[in-house]
Image (cartoon, rainbow, N blue to C red; front, side, top):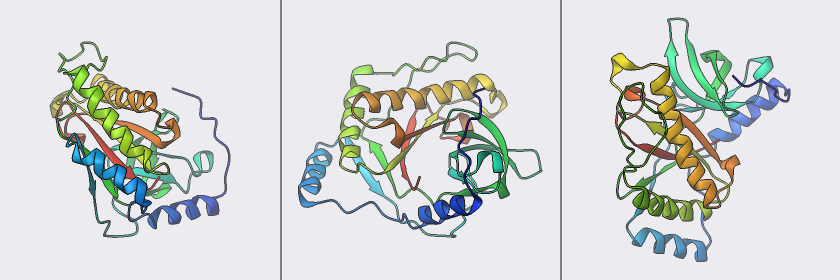
Length: 231
């Protein structure tokens, strides 16, 4: 595990950041030239930008993959990450912090971000080659050329929204009875693979958050999902 070397920040600042995220309910309005460029990209049919109406509670229930911000844990105050899965019966969650560290937090120590305001949907699912359990966890696209083309178009859309954050979920077809460290590593590597392609296409790493959700924690398919989130 990586060392937790975080800047200390006050609880008030952490809660203010969580409140700010709650106001992120829609995609930013594009200038006319950018809106025209977006239309051209979407008209090609390789990628679709699906907007979601954000409803519900200001404090949504924690779910696998949801973004969160720490508001009541002094050593991690104001740091962010993705929820992975609940553990035990003590209202605790395994989480992945944005520095790559996995840890456990009680649910009253973090605020969950509102539902994603949008997602990027690809015409052809971004499939990875299936592997035997305990085989290599190296992420390999089923069709490398097609995947690069699809992700390039998706990156062009993200460039039109330079201030949004994207949560990339890596999924696997792992059955529930084989949800082990290997499955989590494979799922995380798939998310990281997509993140690396986006970075190569000019998207700032700071905007890209990745999390592995194997088997029933995700879609139970060899795929990735890209969501535009509040932080």
